[in-house]
Length: 310
Image (tube, rainbow, N blue to C red):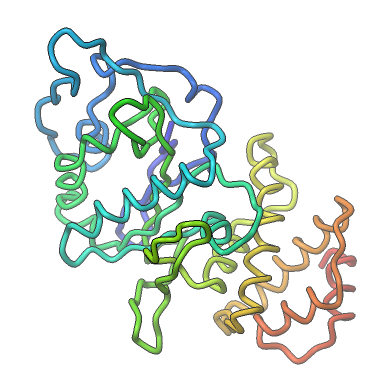
């Protein structure tokens, strides 16, 4: 399911997904006639009654389309879905959001694999039984749908039965403890930038690199029991490296000082996992970590920490 379980963080409810990408079961198709109504699906979690199911989009006599999530969407498909989602959220006043996850690195030139769009939403959207989120789903049900395995997707077109999976996160939670502060504030936590290959000058809001890095480090596990979780951690190894690279280029950081000690342990885990898989961890990588942490110790020491299993 898109949200395997529900949990509370500081009195707020947030979606937590065990699997960050689309499962094979998403290739199962479902007709509009049988497709679960998006509003009713969402309301089950937030305790609000949804509107009556909407009729199928095709006119009389036309076959009902089938919808599913793309397992490996192409970069143009990801861009199409991202700009569609951006346009939808921009139509509502005072909604603060930005894109997170490996999609951000992909738009800036990384060759990292992306299967799901991740978006960070302001926690205020959860107020009043998620009234505004319900409003978004009701207004744009033409573009938003649910797969049989309960993944939210952005539909790529009326004649295209496939969509790109979307994973929502919320601020001020254990997943993303930061707040969304828009530019041009000197304390802004996200930026608006052009994307590779677009050519139109359009921009998307994207979380700053050191905060992307922070989030992935928080969730990094060395020996998870679940096979699915182990695959997720394999992806995190590459995502963390990509975020570290861009954070170094943009000279971002440091990470929160009160979390330096715990993050040192996470970095040591990342170094061990990288070395065990034959990846090179260079002096430049160590220096980048020290810059992000705001520490004045040698890269050799941090490398020894990674090997020692501290």
